[in-house]
Image 1 (tube, rainbow, N blue to C red):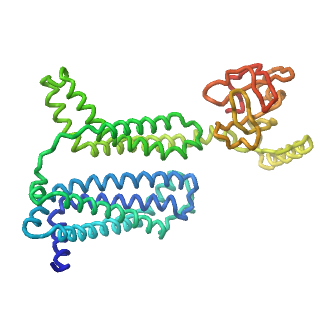
Image 2 (image 1 turned 90 degrees about the vertical axis):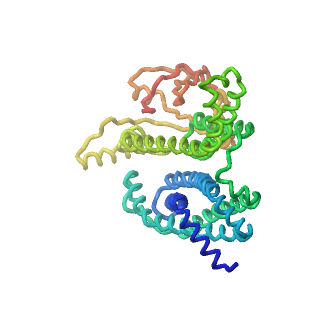
Length: 443
C-alpha cells in the first residue's frame, strides 16, 4: 500500500471519530499548556523567589503524574470504541502491520496538534498567569514572562514520550487479539474482575504513609522537602484503593452470604463490582482533583486574607536593631544613633524591647543538649537554645524572679512542654526551677 493511503486513512479516521478525539486532544492541549506554564515558573529566569520556584517545581511533578494517568485513561476508552472499526479493516484485508502504520500516523498527528497547540496556548496565557501570580503574591513589575527554550524542549520530549507509550500500548492491544475479537471488542461483555490483594494492600500502605508524613512533619523546612513525597504517596494510594481496594471490599461482601443474599444487597453489590472495574480510575481522578481544588482554594484564600496577620505575627515590630558581640560602649553609641534618627523623623519609639541574648545550636538527646559542631547535622532533631540574662527577663516580663547558681527558668516553644527537672548543655548541668507557660520573646 502507498504511504499516502495510510495518511488519508488516518485523517479520515480522525474526522469520523471527532466526537471522541476532540475531547481527548483538548485535554492533552490543556495538560501541555499547564505543564509548560508551571515549568516556566519553576525553571525560568523570571524574577520569582526560590521558594516560589520550588513550590512550582513540586506542582510540575504532580502535573507529570496526572498527565500520564489522564491521557492513558482517556486513550483506553478511545481504543475500545475503535476496536470494531479496526477489526473491519483487518477482515477486509489490511494486515496488522498496515493497521499499525495507520495508527502510528494518527498518533503523530494527535501528538503534534496537542503538543504545539498546548505550547502555543502556554505562551499566550503564560503572561496572564504571571500577572495573576504577581498580583496574589504582591510582586512588583520585575516578575516577567519569558519564552524559555529548555522548558520548551522538556515539554516536547515529555509529552512525545507519553504519546509514544500510548501508541505502543494500542499496538499491543491490536496485536494480541484476533480479528473476530476486534470486531466484537466494543460490544464484548465485562468479565468479573479478580481481587488484586497486593495492589489493595500497597494502596492502603501508600495512603497511610502519605497522611502520616503530612501529620507528623512539624519542621517547615522538612515539610517542604517531604511535601512532594507525601502527595505522591496519597495520589498513588488513592488509585490503588479505588482500583483494587474497592473490588476487594465488594468481593468480601459477596462472600458474606448473610449480607449478600438479601434483596437490597444482591443486585447492588454484584453491579458495583462491574462498575468499579470500569470507573475506578475515573472516580479516583474525581476524588483527587476535588480534594486538590478544595485544599488549593481554601489555602490560597486563607493565606491571601490573613497575609497581614501572618506578617504581624512574624514581625511584630517595624524596626529591629541587632548588635553582635557587643559591649557597654557600643550599646551606648547605638542607642544614641537610634534616638537621633527618631528625633529627625519627628516620631517616638513605642513597644520598645531591649535585651541581650545568646543562641546555641545542636540537637536534643532526652534532657541533654549536644553542642558539638560535628553533630549539628546528626540524624537527630536539631534544636536551638536562646539564653537571656535574668535581669533582662525580669524587666521584660515585669517580674522579680530569683535564681541560685545552676538554676534556670525554661520556656519551650514546642507544642508539648519540656517536662523535666534538669537540662544539660553539653556536660554542664542546670536545674529547671520553673517551666514558663509564656514568654514575651515568643510573641
